[in-house]
Image (cartoon, rainbow over all chains, first blue to last red):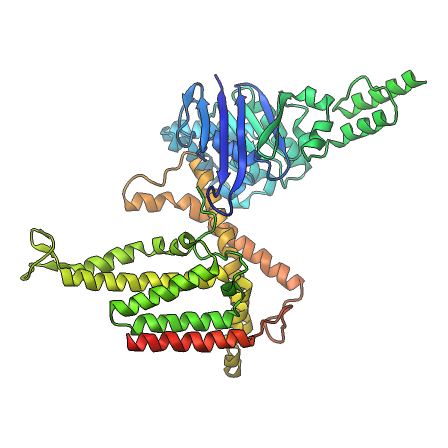
Length: 280
Length: 265
Protein backbone atom coordinates (compact mmCIF):
# COMPACT_ATOMS: atom_id res chain seq x y z
CA UNK A 1 0.00 0.00 0.00
CA UNK A 2 1.81 3.12 -1.16
CA UNK A 3 2.02 5.92 -3.67
CA UNK A 4 5.35 5.11 -5.27
CA UNK A 5 7.56 6.83 -7.83
CA UNK A 6 10.30 4.74 -9.39
CA UNK A 7 13.05 6.10 -11.64
CA UNK A 8 10.90 9.11 -12.48
CA UNK A 9 12.34 11.67 -14.89
CA UNK A 10 10.70 14.92 -15.91
CA UNK A 11 12.08 17.70 -18.09
CA UNK A 12 10.12 20.87 -18.80
CA UNK A 13 10.16 21.95 -22.43
CA UNK A 14 12.04 18.79 -23.35
CA UNK A 15 13.85 18.87 -26.72
CA UNK A 16 13.86 22.66 -26.89
CA UNK A 17 16.39 25.36 -26.09
CA UNK A 18 14.41 25.96 -22.86
CA UNK A 19 14.73 22.38 -21.59
CA UNK A 20 14.98 22.26 -17.79
CA UNK A 21 15.42 18.97 -15.96
CA UNK A 22 13.16 18.97 -12.93
CA UNK A 23 13.32 15.34 -11.78
CA UNK A 24 16.22 12.96 -12.35
CA UNK A 25 15.78 9.26 -11.53
CA UNK A 26 13.57 9.89 -8.50
CA UNK A 27 12.71 6.84 -6.36
CA UNK A 28 10.41 7.61 -3.47
CA UNK A 29 7.33 6.06 -1.86
CA UNK A 30 4.68 7.52 0.43
CA UNK A 31 2.83 5.27 2.89
CA UNK A 32 -0.62 5.75 4.45
CA UNK A 33 -0.58 7.30 7.91
CA UNK A 34 2.83 8.97 7.63
CA UNK A 35 3.72 12.64 7.20
CA UNK A 36 6.54 13.11 4.71
CA UNK A 37 8.24 16.45 4.32
CA UNK A 38 9.70 17.23 0.89
CA UNK A 39 12.39 19.88 1.22
CA UNK A 40 14.64 21.52 -1.34
CA UNK A 41 15.82 24.86 -2.65
CA UNK A 42 13.82 26.78 -5.27
CA UNK A 43 13.90 24.87 -8.56
CA UNK A 44 14.91 21.59 -6.93
CA UNK A 45 11.83 19.81 -8.34
CA UNK A 46 9.58 19.69 -5.25
CA UNK A 47 6.38 20.93 -6.90
CA UNK A 48 7.03 18.84 -10.02
CA UNK A 49 7.41 15.75 -7.80
CA UNK A 50 3.98 16.41 -6.27
CA UNK A 51 2.33 17.01 -9.64
CA UNK A 52 3.74 13.80 -11.07
CA UNK A 53 2.67 11.89 -7.93
CA UNK A 54 -0.88 13.25 -8.31
CA UNK A 55 -1.01 12.24 -11.98
CA UNK A 56 -1.28 15.88 -13.07
CA UNK A 57 1.99 15.67 -15.02
CA UNK A 58 2.98 12.56 -16.94
CA UNK A 59 6.56 11.52 -16.25
CA UNK A 60 8.78 11.05 -19.31
CA UNK A 61 10.33 7.89 -17.93
CA UNK A 62 10.04 5.73 -14.84
CA UNK A 63 6.77 4.76 -13.24
CA UNK A 64 4.21 5.95 -10.70
CA UNK A 65 2.04 3.39 -8.94
CA UNK A 66 -0.87 3.82 -6.54
CA UNK A 67 -1.20 0.79 -4.28
CA UNK A 68 0.57 -1.27 -6.93
CA UNK A 69 -1.51 -0.04 -9.90
CA UNK A 70 0.19 2.10 -12.57
CA UNK A 71 -1.01 5.69 -12.55
CA UNK A 72 -2.52 7.06 -15.75
CA UNK A 73 -3.91 10.59 -15.48
CA UNK A 74 -5.29 12.62 -12.57
CA UNK A 75 -5.90 10.61 -9.40
CA UNK A 76 -8.60 12.78 -7.82
CA UNK A 77 -11.55 10.49 -8.52
CA UNK A 78 -9.89 7.07 -8.30
CA UNK A 79 -9.76 4.96 -5.14
CA UNK A 80 -8.02 5.72 -2.86
CA UNK A 81 -7.97 9.30 -4.14
CA UNK A 82 -4.92 11.51 -4.18
CA UNK A 83 -5.85 15.00 -3.00
CA UNK A 84 -3.70 17.90 -4.12
CA UNK A 85 -3.63 21.24 -2.34
CA UNK A 86 -1.87 23.70 -4.64
CA UNK A 87 0.21 26.63 -3.51
CA UNK A 88 -2.23 29.49 -2.74
CA UNK A 89 -5.22 27.14 -3.19
CA UNK A 90 -7.63 29.96 -2.32
CA UNK A 91 -7.30 31.08 -5.93
CA UNK A 92 -9.32 28.01 -6.99
CA UNK A 93 -12.44 29.10 -5.02
CA UNK A 94 -15.26 29.94 -7.40
CA UNK A 95 -18.70 29.00 -6.06
CA UNK A 96 -21.33 31.30 -4.55
CA UNK A 97 -20.95 29.83 -1.07
CA UNK A 98 -18.16 28.15 0.83
CA UNK A 99 -20.25 25.01 1.18
CA UNK A 100 -20.97 24.80 -2.57
CA UNK A 101 -17.26 25.20 -3.27
CA UNK A 102 -16.29 22.43 -0.85
CA UNK A 103 -18.97 20.17 -2.39
CA UNK A 104 -17.46 20.61 -5.88
CA UNK A 105 -14.98 17.73 -5.44
CA UNK A 106 -17.44 15.23 -3.88
CA UNK A 107 -19.93 15.99 -6.67
CA UNK A 108 -17.22 15.27 -9.25
CA UNK A 109 -16.67 11.94 -7.46
CA UNK A 110 -20.28 11.11 -8.24
CA UNK A 111 -21.67 11.49 -4.72
CA UNK A 112 -25.29 12.51 -4.17
CA UNK A 113 -26.18 16.01 -2.90
CA UNK A 114 -26.77 14.65 0.62
CA UNK A 115 -23.51 12.71 0.71
CA UNK A 116 -21.59 15.69 -0.68
CA UNK A 117 -23.14 17.95 1.97
CA UNK A 118 -22.16 15.57 4.78
CA UNK A 119 -18.60 15.41 3.42
CA UNK A 120 -18.43 19.20 3.01
CA UNK A 121 -19.64 19.95 6.54
CA UNK A 122 -17.24 17.37 7.97
CA UNK A 123 -14.31 18.84 6.03
CA UNK A 124 -15.18 22.41 7.07
CA UNK A 125 -15.26 21.29 10.69
CA UNK A 126 -11.91 19.51 10.24
CA UNK A 127 -10.25 22.75 9.12
CA UNK A 128 -11.82 24.76 11.92
CA UNK A 129 -14.44 26.60 9.87
CA UNK A 130 -17.71 25.89 11.64
CA UNK A 131 -20.52 25.37 9.17
CA UNK A 132 -23.01 27.66 10.90
CA UNK A 133 -20.61 30.59 10.54
CA UNK A 134 -18.98 29.87 7.20
CA UNK A 135 -21.02 27.45 5.03
CA UNK A 136 -23.34 30.12 3.60
CA UNK A 137 -20.69 32.82 3.17
CA UNK A 138 -19.19 33.82 -0.16
CA UNK A 139 -15.66 32.41 -0.46
CA UNK A 140 -14.55 35.84 -1.68
CA UNK A 141 -15.49 37.42 1.65
CA UNK A 142 -13.09 35.22 3.66
CA UNK A 143 -9.78 36.40 5.08
CA UNK A 144 -6.57 34.94 3.60
CA UNK A 145 -6.23 32.28 6.30
CA UNK A 146 -9.92 31.34 6.17
CA UNK A 147 -9.86 31.10 2.37
CA UNK A 148 -6.81 28.83 2.57
CA UNK A 149 -8.59 26.56 5.06
CA UNK A 150 -11.77 26.53 2.93
CA UNK A 151 -9.70 25.50 -0.10
CA UNK A 152 -8.03 22.72 1.90
CA UNK A 153 -11.50 21.61 3.04
CA UNK A 154 -12.45 21.32 -0.64
CA UNK A 155 -9.74 18.68 -1.03
CA UNK A 156 -10.31 16.93 2.33
CA UNK A 157 -14.02 16.55 1.44
CA UNK A 158 -12.93 14.11 -1.26
CA UNK A 159 -11.56 11.79 1.48
CA UNK A 160 -8.20 11.29 -0.22
CA UNK A 161 -6.08 8.29 0.71
CA UNK A 162 -3.03 10.47 0.10
CA UNK A 163 -2.95 14.21 0.67
CA UNK A 164 -0.31 16.26 -1.14
CA UNK A 165 0.21 19.88 -0.08
CA UNK A 166 2.40 22.36 -1.95
CA UNK A 167 3.68 25.15 0.33
CA UNK A 168 0.50 25.08 2.44
CA UNK A 169 1.58 27.87 4.82
CA UNK A 170 3.02 30.31 2.26
CA UNK A 171 1.75 33.84 2.82
CA UNK A 172 -0.17 33.08 6.03
CA UNK A 173 0.11 34.82 9.38
CA UNK A 174 1.13 32.92 12.53
CA UNK A 175 -2.44 31.86 13.40
CA UNK A 176 -3.02 30.67 9.83
CA UNK A 177 0.23 28.70 9.78
CA UNK A 178 -0.60 27.00 13.07
CA UNK A 179 -4.10 26.15 11.82
CA UNK A 180 -2.68 24.53 8.66
CA UNK A 181 -0.11 22.62 10.75
CA UNK A 182 -2.98 21.29 12.87
CA UNK A 183 -4.86 20.21 9.73
CA UNK A 184 -1.80 18.32 8.46
CA UNK A 185 -1.32 16.62 11.83
CA UNK A 186 -4.98 15.55 11.90
CA UNK A 187 -5.00 14.40 8.27
CA UNK A 188 -2.44 11.66 8.93
CA UNK A 189 -5.17 9.70 10.77
CA UNK A 190 -6.94 9.02 7.46
CA UNK A 191 -4.29 9.62 4.80
CA UNK A 192 -0.66 9.56 3.86
CA UNK A 193 0.39 13.21 3.93
CA UNK A 194 3.15 14.77 1.80
CA UNK A 195 4.09 18.38 2.45
CA UNK A 196 6.33 20.40 0.16
CA UNK A 197 7.66 23.44 1.96
CA UNK A 198 10.44 25.96 2.38
CA UNK A 199 9.45 26.39 6.02
CA UNK A 200 11.08 23.23 7.37
CA UNK A 201 10.85 24.50 10.97
CA UNK A 202 7.04 24.42 10.79
CA UNK A 203 6.73 20.77 9.86
CA UNK A 204 9.95 18.98 10.92
CA UNK A 205 8.48 18.42 14.36
CA UNK A 206 5.47 16.48 13.06
CA UNK A 207 7.12 14.76 10.08
CA UNK A 208 7.93 11.05 10.19
CA UNK A 209 10.19 11.20 7.18
CA UNK A 210 12.01 13.79 5.10
CA UNK A 211 12.83 13.66 1.39
CA UNK A 212 15.48 16.21 0.47
CA UNK A 213 15.69 17.17 -3.19
CA UNK A 214 18.70 18.79 -4.79
CA UNK A 215 18.86 19.50 -8.52
CA UNK A 216 15.93 17.16 -9.16
CA UNK A 217 17.61 14.23 -7.38
CA UNK A 218 16.82 12.70 -4.00
CA UNK A 219 19.73 13.81 -1.79
CA UNK A 220 18.28 12.36 1.41
CA UNK A 221 15.34 10.11 2.24
CA UNK A 222 15.07 9.07 5.84
CA UNK A 223 13.63 9.63 9.29
CA UNK A 224 13.04 13.28 10.19
CA UNK A 225 15.18 12.86 13.31
CA UNK A 226 18.11 11.60 11.23
CA UNK A 227 18.04 14.92 9.35
CA UNK A 228 17.68 16.89 12.58
CA UNK A 229 20.83 15.18 13.88
CA UNK A 230 22.66 16.09 10.62
CA UNK A 231 21.40 19.59 9.80
CA UNK A 232 24.46 20.18 7.58
CA UNK A 233 22.59 18.20 4.97
CA UNK A 234 20.07 21.01 4.72
CA UNK A 235 22.83 23.53 4.07
CA UNK A 236 24.34 21.21 1.45
CA UNK A 237 20.99 21.21 -0.35
CA UNK A 238 20.92 25.03 -0.33
CA UNK A 239 18.54 25.35 2.63
CA UNK A 240 18.88 27.25 5.86
CA UNK A 241 18.48 24.97 8.90
CA UNK A 242 15.80 26.09 11.40
CA UNK A 243 17.05 28.77 13.81
CA UNK A 244 16.85 26.42 16.80
CA UNK A 245 19.18 23.97 15.04
CA UNK A 246 21.53 26.76 13.92
CA UNK A 247 21.99 27.83 17.53
CA UNK A 248 22.90 24.27 18.50
CA UNK A 249 25.25 23.96 15.50
CA UNK A 250 27.02 27.16 16.60
CA UNK A 251 27.22 25.87 20.17
CA UNK A 252 28.78 22.63 18.97
CA UNK A 253 31.18 24.54 16.70
CA UNK A 254 32.17 26.59 19.75
CA UNK A 255 33.25 23.37 21.45
CA UNK A 256 30.20 22.38 23.51
CA UNK A 257 29.84 18.56 23.52
CA UNK A 258 26.14 18.39 22.60
CA UNK A 259 24.75 14.86 22.93
CA UNK A 260 22.17 15.44 20.22
CA UNK A 261 20.19 18.18 18.49
CA UNK A 262 16.59 19.01 19.39
CA UNK A 263 13.88 20.87 17.51
CA UNK A 264 12.01 21.91 20.62
CA UNK A 265 13.57 25.16 21.95
CA UNK A 266 13.08 24.12 25.61
CA UNK A 267 14.78 20.78 25.01
CA UNK A 268 17.52 22.50 23.00
CA UNK A 269 18.19 24.91 25.87
CA UNK A 270 18.39 21.98 28.30
CA UNK A 271 20.83 20.13 26.01
CA UNK A 272 23.05 23.22 25.74
CA UNK A 273 22.97 23.69 29.52
CA UNK A 274 23.84 20.02 29.99
CA UNK A 275 26.73 20.33 27.53
CA UNK A 276 28.04 23.41 29.33
CA UNK A 277 28.02 21.49 32.61
CA UNK A 278 29.85 18.62 30.97
CA UNK A 279 32.43 20.99 29.47
CA UNK A 280 33.33 22.48 32.88
CA UNK B 1 2.72 19.63 -21.07
CA UNK B 2 2.92 23.37 -21.02
CA UNK B 3 4.35 24.98 -24.14
CA UNK B 4 7.83 26.38 -23.48
CA UNK B 5 7.16 29.63 -25.29
CA UNK B 6 3.50 30.58 -25.72
CA UNK B 7 2.44 31.59 -29.22
CA UNK B 8 3.80 35.03 -30.03
CA UNK B 9 5.85 35.44 -26.89
CA UNK B 10 9.30 37.05 -27.16
CA UNK B 11 12.12 34.63 -27.97
CA UNK B 12 15.37 36.25 -26.83
CA UNK B 13 18.15 36.30 -29.40
CA UNK B 14 21.07 38.22 -30.80
CA UNK B 15 20.22 38.15 -34.51
CA UNK B 16 20.04 41.12 -36.92
CA UNK B 17 16.23 40.70 -36.88
CA UNK B 18 16.22 41.05 -33.08
CA UNK B 19 18.40 44.16 -33.26
CA UNK B 20 16.30 45.89 -35.93
CA UNK B 21 14.50 48.97 -34.54
CA UNK B 22 10.86 48.06 -33.73
CA UNK B 23 9.44 50.77 -36.02
CA UNK B 24 11.57 49.50 -38.90
CA UNK B 25 10.41 45.97 -38.16
CA UNK B 26 6.75 47.02 -38.02
CA UNK B 27 7.19 48.90 -41.29
CA UNK B 28 8.73 45.84 -42.92
CA UNK B 29 5.91 43.59 -41.63
CA UNK B 30 3.38 46.10 -43.01
CA UNK B 31 5.18 46.04 -46.38
CA UNK B 32 5.19 42.22 -46.26
CA UNK B 33 1.41 42.31 -45.75
CA UNK B 34 1.02 44.67 -48.71
CA UNK B 35 3.11 42.24 -50.75
CA UNK B 36 0.93 39.31 -49.65
CA UNK B 37 -2.28 41.09 -50.60
CA UNK B 38 -1.04 42.42 -53.95
CA UNK B 39 0.39 39.19 -55.37
CA UNK B 40 -2.18 37.36 -57.42
CA UNK B 41 -0.49 34.07 -58.23
CA UNK B 42 1.71 31.30 -56.90
CA UNK B 43 4.98 32.89 -58.18
CA UNK B 44 4.21 35.89 -55.95
CA UNK B 45 3.47 33.62 -53.00
CA UNK B 46 6.72 31.74 -53.67
CA UNK B 47 8.60 35.06 -53.51
CA UNK B 48 6.81 35.98 -50.25
CA UNK B 49 7.59 32.53 -48.84
CA UNK B 50 11.27 33.05 -49.73
CA UNK B 51 11.23 36.42 -47.91
CA UNK B 52 9.59 34.83 -44.84
CA UNK B 53 11.97 31.84 -44.86
CA UNK B 54 14.99 34.12 -45.16
CA UNK B 55 13.77 36.31 -42.27
CA UNK B 56 13.15 33.26 -40.08
CA UNK B 57 16.58 31.83 -40.95
CA UNK B 58 18.34 35.13 -40.14
CA UNK B 59 16.34 35.53 -36.90
CA UNK B 60 17.61 32.17 -35.55
CA UNK B 61 14.16 31.60 -34.03
CA UNK B 62 13.30 27.86 -34.31
CA UNK B 63 10.89 27.53 -37.28
CA UNK B 64 8.47 25.40 -35.25
CA UNK B 65 8.00 28.32 -32.82
CA UNK B 66 7.18 30.60 -35.74
CA UNK B 67 4.79 28.02 -37.15
CA UNK B 68 3.07 27.41 -33.80
CA UNK B 69 0.74 30.34 -34.49
CA UNK B 70 -0.76 28.39 -37.37
CA UNK B 71 -2.44 26.07 -34.88
CA UNK B 72 -4.50 29.02 -33.62
CA UNK B 73 -5.90 29.67 -37.10
CA UNK B 74 -6.17 26.02 -38.19
CA UNK B 75 -9.98 26.13 -38.20
CA UNK B 76 -9.92 29.20 -40.47
CA UNK B 77 -7.43 27.45 -42.77
CA UNK B 78 -9.57 24.31 -43.09
CA UNK B 79 -12.70 26.42 -43.61
CA UNK B 80 -10.94 28.51 -46.28
CA UNK B 81 -9.78 25.42 -48.15
CA UNK B 82 -13.19 23.72 -48.01
CA UNK B 83 -15.10 26.90 -48.88
CA UNK B 84 -13.12 27.19 -52.11
CA UNK B 85 -12.73 23.50 -52.89
CA UNK B 86 -16.20 22.06 -52.30
CA UNK B 87 -18.93 22.53 -54.86
CA UNK B 88 -22.58 21.53 -54.75
CA UNK B 89 -23.88 19.45 -57.67
CA UNK B 90 -20.73 19.94 -59.75
CA UNK B 91 -21.24 20.07 -63.50
CA UNK B 92 -17.55 19.72 -64.30
CA UNK B 93 -14.97 17.07 -63.45
CA UNK B 94 -14.23 16.76 -59.73
CA UNK B 95 -11.37 15.15 -57.78
CA UNK B 96 -13.70 13.38 -55.37
CA UNK B 97 -17.47 13.21 -55.33
CA UNK B 98 -19.61 12.15 -52.36
CA UNK B 99 -23.31 12.44 -53.15
CA UNK B 100 -24.08 15.97 -54.32
CA UNK B 101 -20.77 17.36 -53.00
CA UNK B 102 -17.66 17.41 -55.16
CA UNK B 103 -14.10 18.60 -54.80
CA UNK B 104 -13.29 21.05 -57.58
CA UNK B 105 -9.58 21.08 -58.67
CA UNK B 106 -9.59 24.78 -59.55
CA UNK B 107 -11.33 25.60 -56.25
CA UNK B 108 -8.76 23.57 -54.31
CA UNK B 109 -5.96 25.54 -56.00
CA UNK B 110 -7.63 28.83 -55.08
CA UNK B 111 -8.13 27.52 -51.53
CA UNK B 112 -4.45 26.56 -51.26
CA UNK B 113 -3.52 30.06 -52.48
CA UNK B 114 -5.52 31.72 -49.68
CA UNK B 115 -4.32 29.20 -47.08
CA UNK B 116 -0.67 29.93 -47.94
CA UNK B 117 -1.42 33.66 -47.79
CA UNK B 118 -2.89 33.33 -44.26
CA UNK B 119 0.00 31.11 -43.13
CA UNK B 120 2.54 33.68 -44.36
CA UNK B 121 0.57 36.44 -42.64
CA UNK B 122 0.80 34.53 -39.36
CA UNK B 123 4.51 33.82 -39.89
CA UNK B 124 5.27 37.51 -40.55
CA UNK B 125 3.41 38.82 -37.51
CA UNK B 126 4.67 35.99 -35.27
CA UNK B 127 8.24 36.81 -36.23
CA UNK B 128 7.63 40.44 -35.21
CA UNK B 129 6.50 39.52 -31.67
CA UNK B 130 8.98 36.66 -31.32
CA UNK B 131 11.94 38.93 -32.06
CA UNK B 132 10.77 42.11 -30.29
CA UNK B 133 10.42 42.34 -26.52
CA UNK B 134 7.03 43.65 -25.31
CA UNK B 135 8.63 46.82 -23.95
CA UNK B 136 10.40 47.60 -27.25
CA UNK B 137 7.23 46.78 -29.17
CA UNK B 138 5.17 49.19 -27.04
CA UNK B 139 7.95 51.77 -27.33
CA UNK B 140 7.87 51.47 -31.10
CA UNK B 141 4.09 51.76 -31.20
CA UNK B 142 4.19 54.82 -28.95
CA UNK B 143 6.68 56.50 -31.26
CA UNK B 144 4.56 55.65 -34.27
CA UNK B 145 1.49 57.09 -32.55
CA UNK B 146 3.24 60.17 -31.18
CA UNK B 147 2.27 62.46 -34.09
CA UNK B 148 -1.39 61.78 -33.18
CA UNK B 149 -0.86 63.62 -29.87
CA UNK B 150 -1.45 66.78 -31.91
CA UNK B 151 -5.14 65.75 -32.05
CA UNK B 152 -5.01 64.86 -28.31
CA UNK B 153 -4.62 61.12 -28.90
CA UNK B 154 -3.22 59.66 -25.62
CA UNK B 155 -0.26 57.87 -27.23
CA UNK B 156 1.60 57.46 -23.90
CA UNK B 157 -1.39 55.93 -22.10
CA UNK B 158 -2.14 53.59 -25.00
CA UNK B 159 1.50 52.48 -25.05
CA UNK B 160 1.43 51.89 -21.27
CA UNK B 161 -1.79 49.87 -21.60
CA UNK B 162 -0.19 47.80 -24.36
CA UNK B 163 2.96 47.23 -22.29
CA UNK B 164 0.92 46.12 -19.27
CA UNK B 165 -1.38 43.93 -21.37
CA UNK B 166 1.54 42.25 -23.13
CA UNK B 167 3.36 41.81 -19.83
CA UNK B 168 0.41 40.01 -18.26
CA UNK B 169 -0.38 37.61 -21.12
CA UNK B 170 2.11 34.94 -19.97
CA UNK B 171 1.24 35.52 -16.30
CA UNK B 172 -2.46 35.09 -16.99
CA UNK B 173 -1.84 32.01 -19.14
CA UNK B 174 0.26 30.50 -16.35
CA UNK B 175 -2.40 31.28 -13.76
CA UNK B 176 -5.16 29.82 -15.95
CA UNK B 177 -3.12 26.64 -16.35
CA UNK B 178 -2.62 26.44 -12.60
CA UNK B 179 -6.33 26.88 -11.86
CA UNK B 180 -7.22 24.25 -14.47
CA UNK B 181 -4.83 21.81 -12.77
CA UNK B 182 -6.23 22.69 -9.33
CA UNK B 183 -9.78 21.97 -10.50
CA UNK B 184 -8.66 18.78 -12.29
CA UNK B 185 -7.16 17.75 -8.94
CA UNK B 186 -10.68 18.19 -7.51
CA UNK B 187 -12.10 15.89 -10.16
CA UNK B 188 -13.17 18.47 -12.77
CA UNK B 189 -13.28 17.24 -16.38
CA UNK B 190 -13.00 19.60 -19.34
CA UNK B 191 -12.98 17.04 -22.13
CA UNK B 192 -16.30 15.31 -21.76
CA UNK B 193 -19.87 16.07 -22.86
CA UNK B 194 -21.27 18.38 -25.52
CA UNK B 195 -20.29 22.01 -26.21
CA UNK B 196 -22.63 23.43 -23.52
CA UNK B 197 -21.37 21.03 -20.85
CA UNK B 198 -17.78 21.75 -21.80
CA UNK B 199 -18.38 25.51 -21.67
CA UNK B 200 -20.03 25.16 -18.24
CA UNK B 201 -17.07 23.08 -17.05
CA UNK B 202 -14.88 26.18 -17.45
CA UNK B 203 -16.90 28.24 -14.93
CA UNK B 204 -14.71 27.00 -12.03
CA UNK B 205 -11.70 28.25 -14.00
CA UNK B 206 -13.02 31.55 -15.34
CA UNK B 207 -14.54 32.86 -12.09
CA UNK B 208 -11.33 32.67 -10.01
CA UNK B 209 -9.25 33.75 -13.02
CA UNK B 210 -11.25 36.98 -13.44
CA UNK B 211 -11.42 37.62 -9.69
CA UNK B 212 -7.62 37.32 -9.51
CA UNK B 213 -7.17 39.48 -12.62
CA UNK B 214 -9.28 42.31 -11.21
CA UNK B 215 -7.47 42.04 -7.89
CA UNK B 216 -4.11 42.16 -9.63
CA UNK B 217 -5.15 45.10 -11.83
CA UNK B 218 -6.21 47.00 -8.71
CA UNK B 219 -2.91 46.23 -6.97
CA UNK B 220 -0.92 47.22 -10.07
CA UNK B 221 -2.78 50.55 -10.33
CA UNK B 222 -2.07 51.27 -6.66
CA UNK B 223 1.59 50.27 -7.07
CA UNK B 224 1.93 52.57 -10.12
CA UNK B 225 0.32 55.49 -8.29
CA UNK B 226 2.58 54.82 -5.31
CA UNK B 227 5.48 55.34 -7.70
CA UNK B 228 4.04 58.67 -8.87
CA UNK B 229 2.55 57.56 -12.20
CA UNK B 230 0.41 60.44 -13.43
CA UNK B 231 -0.30 59.48 -17.02
CA UNK B 232 1.84 59.43 -20.11
CA UNK B 233 2.32 63.18 -20.64
CA UNK B 234 5.93 64.23 -20.31
CA UNK B 235 7.23 60.74 -19.57
CA UNK B 236 10.61 59.80 -20.93
CA UNK B 237 12.13 56.37 -21.35
CA UNK B 238 15.20 54.96 -19.66
CA UNK B 239 16.47 53.85 -23.07
CA UNK B 240 15.25 55.75 -26.11
CA UNK B 241 14.98 53.60 -29.22
CA UNK B 242 16.71 55.31 -32.15
CA UNK B 243 16.50 54.52 -35.86
CA UNK B 244 20.05 54.00 -37.11
CA UNK B 245 21.16 54.30 -40.72
CA UNK B 246 21.03 50.50 -41.00
CA UNK B 247 17.42 50.45 -39.71
CA UNK B 248 16.38 53.16 -42.16
CA UNK B 249 18.15 51.46 -45.07
CA UNK B 250 16.62 48.07 -44.17
CA UNK B 251 13.17 49.62 -43.97
CA UNK B 252 13.35 51.62 -47.20
CA UNK B 253 15.07 48.99 -49.33
CA UNK B 254 13.18 46.01 -47.84
CA UNK B 255 9.76 47.65 -48.05
CA UNK B 256 10.37 48.96 -51.59
CA UNK B 257 11.52 45.59 -52.87
CA UNK B 258 8.63 43.69 -51.26
CA UNK B 259 5.97 46.09 -52.51
CA UNK B 260 7.54 46.16 -56.01
CA UNK B 261 7.68 42.34 -56.16
CA UNK B 262 4.09 42.20 -54.93
CA UNK B 263 2.94 44.51 -57.71
CA UNK B 264 4.87 42.70 -60.44
CA UNK B 265 4.14 39.04 -59.54
